[in-house]
Length: 561
Image (cartoon, rainbow, N blue to C red; front, side, top):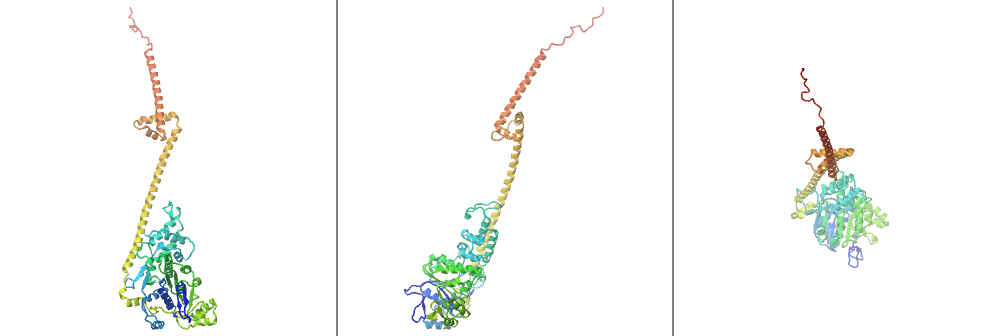
């Protein structure tokens, strides 16, 4: 952007060779001194030069200032200015976008708005750093980054949190752990349950502001259609979100990173509008604001050489109230009437008295000093040919009056997303129930195995006892025991007989048979010996000389003569 005439009364985006210079422009002026009008005029020039216009911040929640560009101007001061500079009043083609939330009114019709969500898988370190309020690799940061990288396309907030918990506890149940391929096949968890609680706390607001979704959600932001549409202004609103400043800033950073991450889709250059930048990145920011300031600074540094070329236009009521790194990222800076902040500006730039005086009382409301060209005096920044949002306006009322046929009700979308959240909840509940059932079955299996092992141990102990008893006996006793068992169990096989006695299963049947046969042989010999003794006794008895008996009549006494 440079001065183009000898009188230095206007600016042009193009250099001496007719090429548009990509710049990061910041306009400072106190409230009511046309900085918003100047921004809109510069954006209009970029748009005419073929740039895609994106406004990703609505610092005055619900006021939708840049959205008024879809209407023709009606204020007298604006129309007078356009006549003076030879501009015809016109209306821009504008598309409106809003993060989905359950705060969307369903009891009335609203303007035509594209409600959208961000896929959890697309979020990265910068977005999570803002949420956690640190860029350092804490356990919580690590858990968030790993989860967004590794969840499936069907995982929403519930699935996301379940993954975080699972990664901390490790895979498995009870004391058993399985090797986790997403964690270098380690069997241990990564983090502590404290980090799970922290992640849960950080994500609680997104149950109401339900714009973090699964990859397959039909409302996911369509960067391709946005970054290939130069015909429209693309204005992002936040009217129905909660008033949580961290949530509002999270959306801005996610949009900024989304543009840079999808720059490969661009066919034309882009200019990004960031109204009232002090609200996003105040001086010496802390908490999540510090992470937003880091994200802004890094993005502004990348913009000029990104995609087909990127520029940005920001404004602020206060120069000293903006983060120093962000304001130093500007390649072109304008100062309008600064009021009380004029002294801080003068000290920073070492301005002399004449310029200090100008900063407190400019020639006109839309007159600005360009840094490094202050000696050229005040420069008039032309207004846009379209309507500017005045403090007394209400966007929804204006839209209803100007475009009644485009008003819509979004009850169906809200119901669809309620069902989506409920389905996500039920899916995890069913998954947990199934896991609990599997865990119970596993516990029962382990208990059963322990009981069986205990029985087997008892059998083994009994068997060992039998073997010990058998080993302590003499061989003759062992042989007798085998023989008696076989006698009492004639139909039992040798193998079963050997096991019953307590012989080892590998060779017990042979030993049992050997002992049985050897003892039988002993018995046979004993019997043979006994039989021989009986025979001898019989022979002796049969050959024994009988006792002499008297002859017949010897026992009688003879009769006397």
